[in-house]
Length: 325
Image 1 (cartoon, helix red, strand yellow):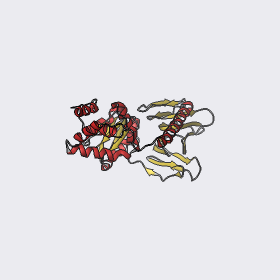
Image 2 (image 1 turned 135 degrees about the vertical axis):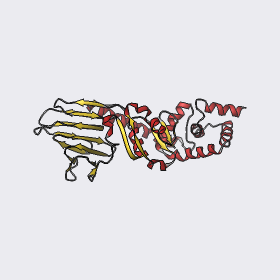
Image 3 (image 1 turned 45 degrees about the horizontal axis):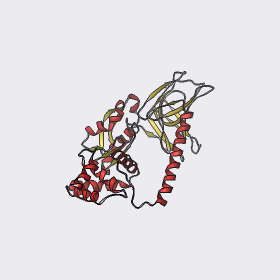
Image 4 (image 1 turned 90 degrees about the horizontal axis):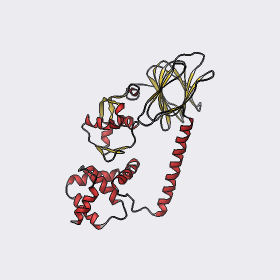
């Protein structure tokens, strides 16, 4: 009876979904203070059904995923069960804690610097349009920030983070210049995107013409025309390519539109509008080709909407952690 009570206590707050039960047991078994009764209860649960064993094995295989580690911590807090690696000694934990503090300090310092420099910003899931005095506009995508300088012989915008769509009014005497981490984009009048990613920038032209150069002046500038794009990183400019997908540009109309796009690409776009981690049970699902359209006004529910239209299971272990498959 006590074993059954232990089992019921662990699964309190969870529904009957086997994925959630498997994760709950996995987190609990990482602790140092697992009782004999709990171990017996786990073995009883494991042997109730072959599906229990298969699901637990799949969760165990995902244990090496860094994003899942963080998400499991969130799940542990929600269900009041503490994950703690048995092999970790105090000497190993201390450097990790110091490294985590340093990383957090660096992150907060970087975000504070962006907050202090930025004239316009958006939160995760938010979009905002800025109207300049010269008639040009800038639409900020989710989690983006810009600093603006419209005085003097040139009009300037610095992309501090995220992605912005620009519609620039022509003025031959005052060029419009956008600077990002790795790139400088010069334009007289056009419609284009600048996206600052982790380790690279991306410039995409809808119509008109822009000159793109890398800030290190490692390569000759490139001229982009209608429906052309280029990526720029620390090594300079990449090869010009044709924009053949609406997925990367459709957000300006309030939707994510995907045509024969890999599931992973679509989910990566959705993740920009929500916090949390998505992990895959089956890596082959990443390449599953899908078609559709999702309303960005439903940013919190986009994964649920996507799941309803696919024959793929999406399990919400917490609001922060979703398992695909």
